[in-house]
Image 1: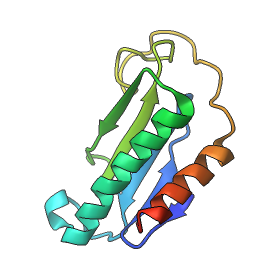
Image 2: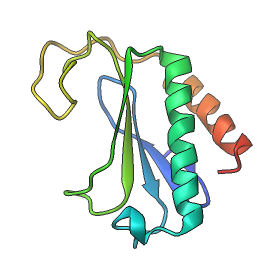
Image 3: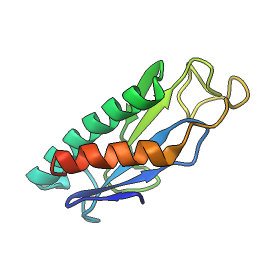
Image 4: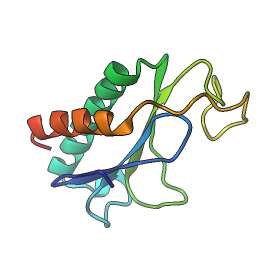
Length: 124
């Protein structure tokens, strides 16, 4: 976990692409409708901030956003920076590999500091 806010926290998903996972802080949030209004608002605002920061920093060809929790029954949102030369493009990252992994993303610490600053500025 590299960000811990009032209503959510953010983790990196270890992958060959920049891939973030946002989690509702309340473990009882199994579905979005289980979340309080302020949690939902923060999740949505944080999703948009993560997307914008990924786009600005990594310059991906596409952003993928997914939310399903069959294996982990807790509200969480995947936000992935996709590139036409990544290992699975145009398939989803859970799909069939199309080619070898691309080189690892650039310095994650710089990206994290930019994202944390944007989330803090938004009061998340």
